[in-house]
Amino acid sequence: MLEGQLVRLRRPELTDAERCYRWFNDQDVVGNLIAQRYLISLAEEERFLRGMPEMSYSNGGILAIETKDGRHIGMTSFYDVRMEDSQAGLAITIGEKEWWSKGYGGDAVLTLVGFGFHQMNLNRVWLTTVEYNKRAIACYKRCGFREEACLRQDVFRHGRYWDFVQMAILRQEFDEQQEGGHRA
Amino acid sequence: MLEGKLVNLRALEPGDVDREFQWVNDRDVTRYLTIRYPMAKGEEERWLNDRPANDFRNTVLAIETKDGVHIGNIGLEDGQPENRKASLGIMIGDKTYWSNGYGSDAIVTLLRFAFHEMNMNRVWLHVHDFNEHAQTCYKKVGFVEEGKLRQNAYQEGRYFDTIAMGILRSEFDELYGGDADA
Image (cartoon, rainbow over all chains, first blue to last red; front, top):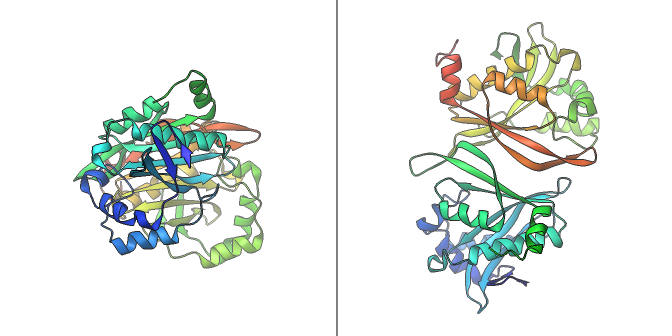
């Protein structure tokens, strides 16, 4: 268990499949996600969870986000981890919409980033967001991520091309902000 | 064969192995790329023999001068049909051909193919911040700088920034014309 202020992160279980199935077929949720476009079945979700490799430096890994009273509200992960460059991409979804905009996502991001820097020895964590997801961009900025690039017409969704915002936080920046007692 | 002004682009052949082997083990060449570990000739042979046919998702082509000298490779990776984009990579492995416009011509030739034959909308690339020569070349061709990824690549004892660049089909057509033989 990784303990944040509002959430804890744990490895997904097969019993999470129905919730993931519901979230990743919810157009309000996947409309903001880049990798998720096609519909998935419950059987595919179960197969995915069953076949998931263990969490490690090279695999990265997916974690379930729970509130402190044990309610599973979303997923977060490290992916594309590059060993020599000591960096990983971060992804996050709050699937339960009533938990949006309440600080749970930011707390989950900071908890995973802290694990990446202080337990995995990463140097850089980056993420990308589609330009219209203003809520996410504001959240990542509060977490200490800095905007690094605007990738023009990088993704096609909802009938047109959109820019992608790429952001990152370095370990040194994270440490400085932790010393200052910062929370998202 | 894709014909440029200075170069032609063709599919790789198993017989290219000796040159490929030499280039990917030449640190003067690979320090500008993401290749890091020494590679055996057998590995290079396997790669040339087993790689799938060029297609939307992945294409690698040999760059030849007009008199048939193989001087490097160019390719498109991670082609995504929904987003109609791919990333471009290039290596002029034969150092005697650096800084003579062969790379630029190969890029324009491949971009024309990407936009007008593959129906791409965007081509992007990453380049080390210390590789100013390549950045000048990409800008000259028409790539636009889109941002800087801080401490993105570790080599030679430290982290370096990476410059992100991209070119859109509309920009390419404005620079080079929408017709096939511009």
